[in-house]
Amino acid sequence: MADYIRFDWAMKRLLRDKANYGVIEGLLTTLLNEKITIRRMLESESNQEEEYDKSNRVDILAEDSKGRLILFEIQNNNEYAYFQRMLFGVSKLVTEYIRRGQGYENIRKIYSINIVYFALGAGKDIVYHGTTEFRGIHNNDILQLSPFQREKFEVDTVSQLYPEYYILRVNDFDKWSKYPLEQWIYFLNTGDIPEDADAPGLGEARKRLAIDSLTKAEKNAYYRHLDNVVILRDNITTERAEGRAEGRAEGRVEGRAEGRAEEKLEIARNLKACGVDVVTIMSATGLSAEEVEKA
Image (cartoon, rainbow, N blue to C red; front, top):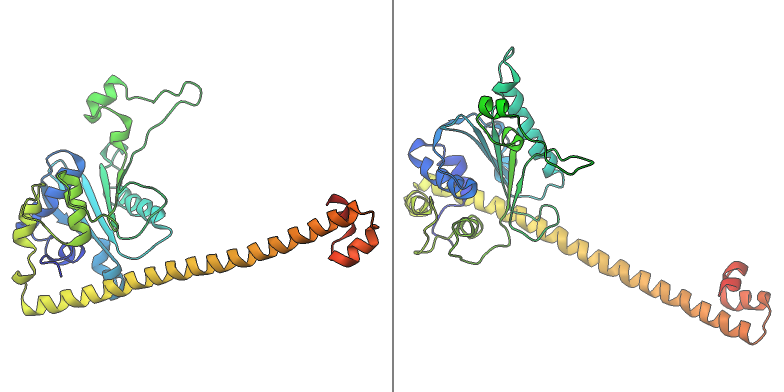
């Protein structure tokens, strides 16, 4: 068993504490490639969720020193509509964090950070970044901000005004690396922090997220959480295995049926070559008159 607390449970129970902000700041600094300082934690959806959802999904909402909103979501179970869930979560923040009567220039910049423990979508990478841009239909050029807009909004591109999405598909990544982001992915998946870890925030995580630092009650709660996660993952594995087995069985049935159909056509071709009439061939093979003609 890993010596450190899983990141989803840590987010729920520990990382909302200001003393532990350094762990999340380290991950954000690594992912966004800029120094991130968290100003405060805000109310998040998971505070009102039921026990099953708390094991399945964890979210945390932070505001950084620049006033930007950062929504973390961790999803343990497979959710086919998760892309739409990401959009819904960001859309709620856009409307909730602007007061009635304020101009649209006051809409907050939002980052949606999604750590998923299942194969979301179809792709080969472990980290995906989504932005918004407007590309010309005729000239394929990207629509830019005017000089006035750049000065007014203090950004360089249109995409910087829109929400940005990050998807970390961590479930299958278990190779230690010298690169900071891959070190974080490794920790998120395995719960292990090797001695040579040097990614921002992992040193802080080693101090703050040790299982031995938990009280007895906290350990009991944590182990119950792990049991729930194991059940969720077992369900995913079982569903995948059953799906593959059904697919193989259907494939064998379809293959046998195709083989028999081709055999009948071959017999029909041979009989036609021998001058046998169509009615007799139909009777011998079970084919229709049209199928015999095409054979």
